[in-house]
Image 1 (spheres, rainbow, N blue to C red):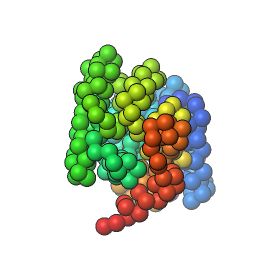
Image 2 (tube, one colour; image 1 turned 90 degrees about the vertical axis):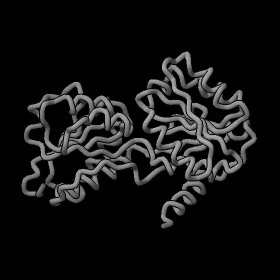
Image 3 (cartoon, rainbow, N blue to C red; image 1 turned 180 degrees about the horizontal axis):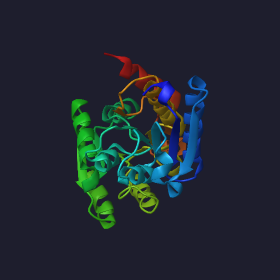
Image 4 (tube, rainbow, N blue to C red; image 1 turned 120 degrees about the horizontal axis):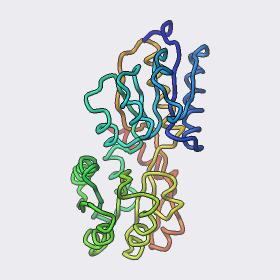
Length: 286
């Protein structure tokens, strides 16, 4: 895609909340910095019409709802999706080509390395999966084995399975690694999961900043600005003639800590800055 033929970029948001707006603002600012004449339109998925995309050189879908709506269209310009889990991306994409992504979830090895750095005394990592998230949990289990941790998973078919699964996962402690599977971890189930883990003295590691506020000890996540920045890099490369439309894990990440919950569990954690710097240093090693 050359700059001469790059008529416009359309950003399609799953919803109008501030998280999606932050993504759109950061993405637009960064693309316009290097392509000041670029026309960038931002719409919500409810406003989506196939003809609105016909002149676009690139369409950016933000969130799972936007991704599903865009991939349901018979044809689109090249698509770049973000703020959705890898499993959702792979399921929705099917056999479509010219579709890239920056996932919301982190590389499996990064989650496990954080556990190693922050909670070195814990050797058992428990996970909950549905049929839709089994592949992702299998990758996490493999990463745990590679770093000499004992990974255990319980399959959840119904919300009523969650509490018995926690009891089976943690007979004598460990750490619960939450995954972006909304059939298990959602606004309805999360308070019970966090409370059940706390009562068993099991720290929870989340995948968004909201998890720390809700009661997770740690959260490893990429902010909307960090995801948007990576998407802007891909967009700039496309506008400058690249044909690569990759599917990538986030490069940049943040770590959040709930000090109150950590103290209640008797955990003495390094600061979020120190953990992030140690994790970044570890990832730079060959």
